[in-house]
Image (cartoon, rainbow, N blue to C red; front, side, top):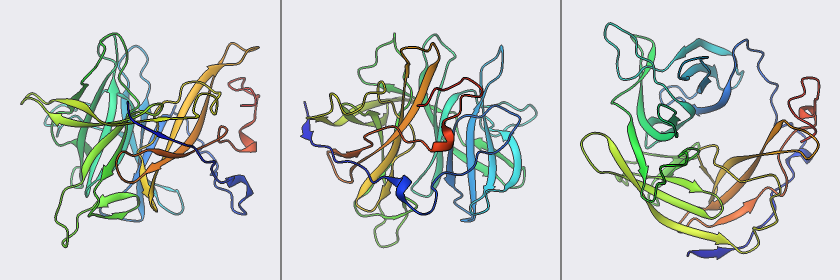
Length: 300
């Protein structure tokens, strides 16, 4: 059932002289599960996407352009379109979107709740400069896990590039003239155990099947994380000789009814079978996060 691995602790980033936490933006709208990536055409810009709640309707996916260094907004917020609109605007319906670069192109992976249980989709995005809008190039691909159980949600898959011969920039594979090969897009389906899947086109309707390609199991993972099930979060980026990704988990405190969400980070090997090498020993948070004024969290 896979290969065993041992775990090593992360560096304590709070000991660094420069803070790694940015002040939150003060926005009027609700931003849920934001994700960001570098612009492919302008290295000074970052595009951020997030889930836009819509009461009584299906949620949509919003986006905004930011300056990479000042974090100032360079383009006001809008919503991602489904394919290129003609007369009527058709928005992309979905939740928990992750935006990422894959071999020089921008993609988005998300889930929607059009049926009782959430299902996973991904699509290539295109920014139309003339029309000043983001839209999908084609209808999104519905990705079906090979052992999918219809009575559970499919969400929180973390994408990453695998390309041994590629050069990498910003953690993502980029085209190379010396090595004209395509990067393989893989997904982390599960963290514990660490299950890696690859999606294959199965028919002309856009359905894809995700098959397990690698699976590794930790020897000492039963008690190192005490804050709920580890679930996927950010796309994994190559940092040095390892991939780095952040995950989340949640649980109810014994004396509180509210659900508390926390996050951690982990790293895994850059080559198959992609065994995990490091995991946060505790949730990552900053001292300014401990704030009970709104009652949403309790000293997590």
